[in-house]
Image 1: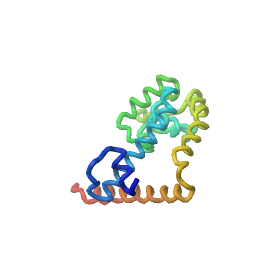
Image 2: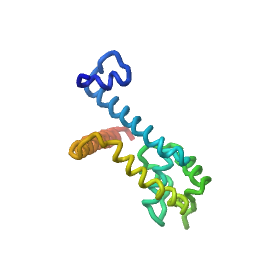
Image 3: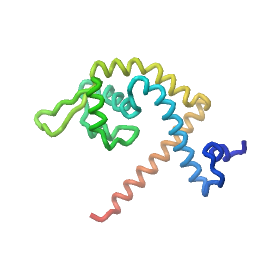
Amino acid sequence: MTKGKQLQEEIVQRRPFHSTGAEVVVGVLRTAAVIERYFNQLLMPRGLTIQQYNVLRILRGAGTDGLPTLTIRDRMVHEAPGITRLIDKLEEAGLARRERAVPDRRQVFCFITQAGLDLLASLDGPVNAADDAAVEMLSKEDQQLLISLLDAVRAGHRKHSRDNETRRPA
């Protein structure tokens, strides 16, 4: 298969991409979707979505201090406009709990439960293996290069977002 044609054939696109940038964006999005499906197959039998798994990992990392709901939302890999519903489902499943902060009762802190910790512990090995398997076709050097390239793209988008915010009229 010729260089640059693999993605086109994979998504059955007859015309060439209008630019290299377009091919990069579609390639990143397609790759993310492929990896997400791979992880869904691991998590779904345990009754978790990728977003719920992400929340549980964030809460585990917070330890006994817990985290405010909006902090969790901001740390998530995927945007979660429905963070309250996401935490509702985790709470209903007994994997997380919420408490109102004292003295500011408007703020809600979220915590992982022992059941949530146990579930994550049972998934740690399979998820670590899946992480490695998702990129095993790349050498360690290529993995490091990919990390650097993706970091650069995200940093560029953060800068672009900040620049746009400073240009908005008040």
